[in-house]
Amino acid sequence: SYVADELPTLVAEHFPAERRRQSIMGHSMGGHGALVIALRNPGQYRSVSLFAPVSAPSQVAWGQKAFAGYLGANRDAWLQYDATALVARARAPGTIRIDQGSADQFLADQLRPELFVAACKASGQPLDYRLHDGYDHGYFFIQSFIEEHLRMHAAALEQPIKTA
Image (cartoon, rainbow, N blue to C red; front, side, top):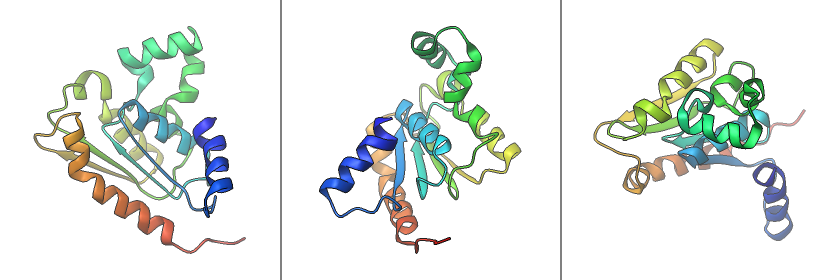
């Protein structure tokens, strides 16, 4: 994929970057994409953080419409790209951080973080889920907590690289 393969290669070709020191984050559907990429590429990322991600797209209208359009009617194929399904058999590095606003207009019908929280608990995936009173789905929400995410990723990236 572009994010998991092509982009890191381009960055490494043009900047003094180490491919063994990567993290990933995203917001909303991009948060779900970041989470799926991390779960489908074990060992590639040192940390994962998300803002208000779509958590179980195969179980909500937005995701069902997108999956049907891109992957067809075979719901088993959808599960390969559904983070809640993937976390039952894959692990992200360390603790996944999710920040979610309690006043997010998409929380109950489209984001459904409680499904991902339950799947993490059942599978043993460490998760730091933080629900923030009064915040919605917008950029002010992200602006309010982005520094914490960046500090978390910086700390993970600074850890020594483990050798076999």
